[in-house]
Length: 196
Ligand code: CUA
Image (cartoon, rainbow, N blue to C red; front, side):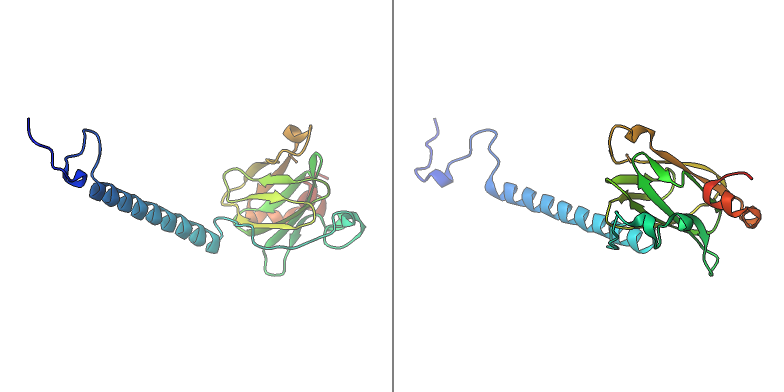
């Protein structure tokens, strides 16, 4: 039987034990991989945020949820779709247990659309499947998201934050019409999708 060295550091390691330099090297590799993943994820957040493909919660715009109906931006007459001087659209909605007001809005395709929402009661969610629109609607704040609908069609708009017993039934609609058909829409059609 071979003699073991007296110095314990000189003895061979038992089976299954990895030498320290290998451990250090492996850990360093993994740290580099983690740092690279963090850099890539931060870059994705910054690029998608700057290009408007994603909406990081950025604009802190407080509003008093108890006086929404008394006047100001979210008074009833201001809700729905409004045409801006530059040709873009602004859609104002109030989320309330358990509906969006108005329940349906109409916008033109291939046009910049800015949604501005606030809540009258609890936290709701605002999601347009197939688009970049996904926001929390928090009472006391205005949520603002921008998008552009490439194609005409009907978009369902579910609330996706649990807001109470009626949460599952809280849906609204965005009706996107071809750009050349929008000017012919009456005000009631634009803001409520109502036919006159
Ligand atoms: Cu509103 Cu869920």
